[in-house]
Amino acid sequence: MTTNWIKIEQPISGESANIAASSTASIEINASLHVVVDIATNPNYVTKLFGSWGPTPVFECASMEGESPLRKGEIRRIVYGEGTETNEEATILLHPLRHAYRLRWRSRMPFSGMAGCNSVDWVFTPSCGGTRVTWEADFTPNSSLVRPVVVAIAERFYAPFQKKCLGALKDISEQGTARKR
Image 1 (cartoon, one colour):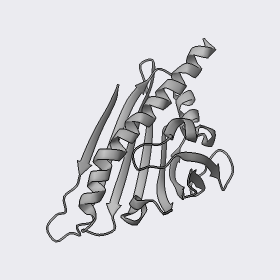
Image 2 (cartoon, rainbow, N blue to C red):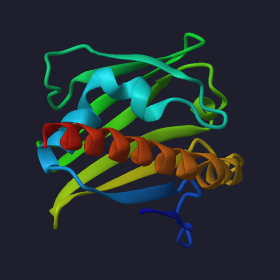
Image 3 (cartoon, rainbow, N blue to C red):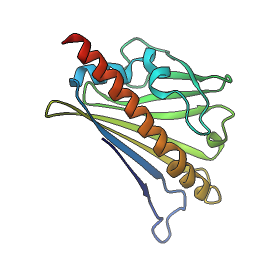
């Protein structure tokens, strides 16, 4: 089962209104930790896992600027169907338990001009009979004027997108495990 929750942080008095909206999803997968992590972090699975959802264009391919496997500070480049792209800069890599990165927008997508510092954190936890995956994404609006739009996008598009992607990760991971039995 996939669970989603949205956390909207309110600014404390005197603090900037550019506080992040967070979208978190988690799922239990009946496959080993290493199988799930290898699929979730492999650039060859990007199109199968992420596809397209709402205003997000179709993921066409992913490539890494550094060596495989990805190392801290290296960039994974995601190219979308219409030619726009996003760079993911690895910030935390604790293989096989955690994979975090900062999104560096280089695209014409509407969301890229509204949210500046975006970070994504994947946590993989061994559980009874498999792996629990938790995916958190934080979006910081570029200004207080676009904050309601950023929050709405996180709630209406990103959270369902996370649920869809984690479902695909579950299906692919469990199919791979079933074939090995």
